Amino acid sequence: MTAPDSRQCSVEGCAFPSGPCAKGFPNPIEECPSLGDPLAGGTEDDFESVPERRLVSFEDGLRLDEHRVSAILARRPSRVVAIVGSSESGKTTFITSLFEQFRNGPFAGFLFSGSETLLGLEQRCHESRLKSGRELMHSERTKRLAMGYLHLAVRAESLVGSVVDLILTDFPGEMFDAARNTASQMQDLHVISRADHVLMLLDAERLIAPATRHAMLTHSKTFLRRAIEEGMLTSRTSIHLVVSKVDLLRDNPYAEPIVNLVNKHRTEVTAMVESLGLPVTVHQIAARPTTGPDFDPVGMEGLFRSLLTTLRHSVHEGLPSRKEFPFAAMPTVAEFAWVYRRTRR
Amino acid sequence: MSKETNIVAFGLAEAGKTTFIAALWTVAEGGEVAGSLRAAQLGNDVKHLNNIRDTWLECLPFGRTLRGKEVVVTLHLVEPADQGTAIRLSLPDASGEVLHDFFKQRGWPSDFDQQLSQADGLLLFIHPAGLHESPYLLDLQAMVAEASEEGSRDTDHDIREVTPAAETTPTPWSADLVDTAAVLVDLLQQAVRATSAKVRPFPVSLIVSAWDLVTESSADAWMRRRAPLLHQYLTSQPELFRVRAYGVSAQGAPLEKRDSLLAVQPFERILIVGEDVAPHDITAPIRWILKA
Image (tube, rainbow over all chains, first blue to last red; front, side):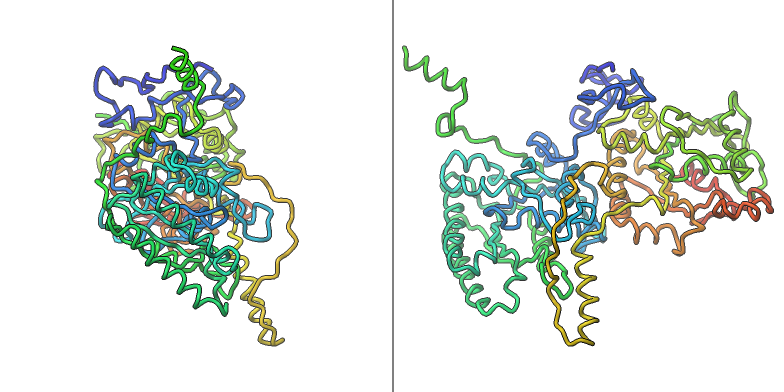
């Protein structure tokens, strides 16, 4: 298979980069797939009918890297939604439930307008579908999948306004736990400093259990305090305290005290972020209820709409770079070498 | 005066592309359908077109278009109302399996990309029987619960929680398991990037094949109900796509009814519904792209 030069346009007659793009793209390097690299790893057998043809490759569709996220953010109005919470608090379930809603039709007054991570969304939904061979709902843990960013483009059903890109983080809960403990690992979540919304998931199952409820609420506050100390929360971010799996509180005798506890937590969080002027809201959701009668998701519409109503960042603002913490994190080999040379002088 | 129009036929396996092209060629060459596009000249090589037309005329089944057997069909047509302008229509008749391979392998050959870059429109084929969707387990649980509720009225048992069943070994995810609508959205996203930004909104004639088997009032209503993800994608961006949906049965009926199909004039077998469509005019989706 002949590999094309990645900077060579495959369109006949196109003069780019020395002249204008034949397809009319204003920024061909970012937008024109005809400039893409050849499909990596392909063989002639992949395309029996077309040996020796050059290939134009697609993105893998599983996740976005930060470069691609920044390109999307530069394109049109977007919302960056950082979804944080401990393991199995329902972060991935929230994302897959959202996508499943659109699979059935318009949702919360919005239409599905595409996704650059359709395969990633489909992959995450797999274990909640019949073809998985499972008989009960299940979410693949993000730790086993590659972490990264997922993308969903939506537009108001009225078609008023433009398409809005939602960038959803899908990080494992272990990263949330680690970020509470060390500054450098909080910096691994530097997307938070560009987030329009931080969704802090509070697992109702752990709220119900006396042994875990206080630790979980404390972890939530510690995480936010760490983010503030690292300068990652700015006045442009909205904080959403999202009680997940709220269906478990249905008919639960302790539901009212738990709701009171969450409201107290909200008051404490509001006081923490008061100087930054961040709005703090509480949502109750059951993205994938485990009990009937109708199994309809709870609270998803309201939360989804609230993600789309406010825009505090400038329209084309990309992702920030990771703040440099040269030796707080595990040093790389190069860093070790640099330190070694310095100390030997 | 001649105007070249390039239209790409896009559809997964057995979506009805070849049957459509065969019926189209029959109508264009026969000139019996009022208002339809006509064949202006035969062109240099119409062997493939004549082969598939003969199969269609005899009401015989088409084999799948095989990998490696894709051909670019070129038709020289003319608008009956505008005899002065000849239309050179290029329609790649590619195997649907190959298109699915492109999806899985995340890339397509540069010459296919180039056909798209020169395209003035797209014929997007969907066969009702080819739309695969894996049911959401929550929907199934709701159905089970509903059935249990109905049963409980008689037995006075309150079954609101689905009893956990024994887990079977789960099937690992692969790109083969992706819903058809999601596959088509993904491929359309790649296709629209390949097309010229000068052709906006990009015309898409959406063809729901085997329309004789569908009971919906319109192809748009069928899409909205059966492929909501794809319908939303295409209709939410009028700046990007101009879409018109057609229900088409190029055969007219299942081939099991061959005797009755052969009993009428060939063009009379063609069933097409949609906006501004004359009876049997299978050229309507192309005429709409030409005017879009």
